[in-house]
Each structure stands twice: as C-alpha cells, then as structure tokens.
Length: 302
Image (cartoon, rainbow, N blue to C red; front, top):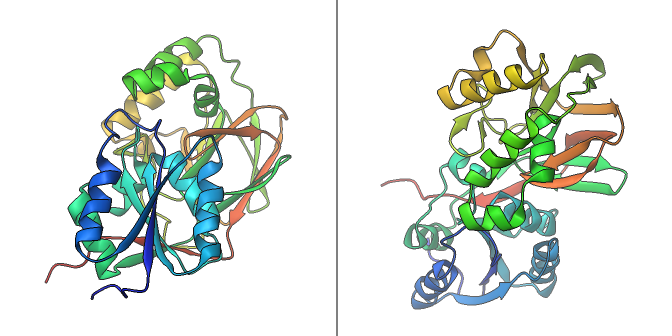
C-alpha cells in the first residue's frame, strides 16, 4: 500500500541516545524521500522535549507517522505526545536496551522501517499510565519500584553514554550492599501484597532480550505485575542471574500477577522508574490508558 502523497513523516532524534546514533535518522529520511515521502527531522534539546515535538507534529496536521529515534525513554516521550491522536508511532531503535523494539519485533534497519511506514502496517498497543505526585504520565513498556528503580536513578548519564548497558552493571554493583531493601505495600487490583521490588510491565522482556514475564500484555488492557519476594544483595544477585538465564518467572519467590490497576502507597519517597528513566518517587498508581497507540511494524511477508 502506497502512502498518501499529502501525508508526511516527522523524525524525532534524541542525539544522546545510544552509541551508534549518528547517521541513522539521516539514512531513514533519505530512503523515505526517495520514495516520495515528505520528511522533517528534528532533534530533542532536553528531557521531555520529544513529547512537545510529537504534539507539535500532531497539531500541525498532515502527519501520518512520527519516528522516535532513540531508546525506550525517547519512545515513551514520543508516545505521550501522540496519545489520543491517529498518528502512528514508528521506532528507529538506537538506544541502550531497545526493549519495546525487541518485544514487538520492530525493524532495526532503516530500509525495513521505511518499508513499514510506506506500507502502513501497524499494531495496536494499550500503554500504561503512571500517576505520581508530579501528575500522570504514559509508559509503553514498564514501571518499577525497588532495586531496579534505585539503579536507574543512580546510574551515571556520562558513563551510560560512554559504555552503554555496562553503566547499569556498575550501578548495580554499587547498589547491592548500599540499597536498604524496604518492604513495599503493593495493591494489585485492590488486593494487598508485600514485596522487596515490583515491576509493572506491559511486555514480556526486560533490559533488552531477557524474559521478565511469560507473556506480553502489549495488545491487552492489562499488566504483568512481577513481585520479588526476598530482599538483600544475595537474593538480588540470584534474581539477576535468573533473568540472564531466562528462568526468572520460575523462581519460587517471584510472583507474577495479571492486573489492570496497581498502587504502591508505602513506603513513600522511594525512587520510581518508567521505561528505563527516573520518574519521581512513591506513592504511585498505575492503570491502563483509555486510548491505544498504533505502532508501525514490519509488513507481513507475501
């Protein structure tokens, strides 16, 4: 299916994402323009700017797709700007983990992504909404409270830019014996649980290709809520090894529940991460957005 010539594509580039970012957006724009598609490329200047740029693309009209060029945090920012519109989110994954792209089997190649955009192939996903003292914010992959959120809050941005995912390994090793491992009160569809950490996930993957939950909830109005039962450095190391081995969902002290609402009222003041970025502190509530998002995917093979 050819794209309507009156439509256009906006490519939003996070210039600080990943380590191989230069040239990707330029190559994608070139492929689209050679196919007769009108393209504009804009760069983010600060955190949150991608949301404003996406909203502006929607407001101007005539835009069929907005491409998020960056990592999962950039994708989430662009998705927030597109929420409630009929503009399709496309992803050019050049970030650290690119979890959503792996989750949905999105193209990592500029030519394939251009083909997906031109063909108009897309999938519908139901993102989550995180409610904190700072307000409400959409997330497309996950939100977390506990050890992983502490790591996200304390990772060095400079080291992350220099060495990518290895920066998180450094942050984990530093946190293992310094983090205090408080007990969380987690209300899952109104039922109270206790956990050392919790990840509220729309997807099945975590930190790249690693299996967090048995199934993806992207196409459903639900979360997988992963509750980690034990606390302390040795339990955390065991969880990390199980994640790498693909056995985390089978750990006896890991509980995975399906839910549509999750609240963590206590303790307050604990760090929260959303799609791999620091995002305020507890208390929080998460529920499913009332409006889905369409994401460009590879066209089906003929």
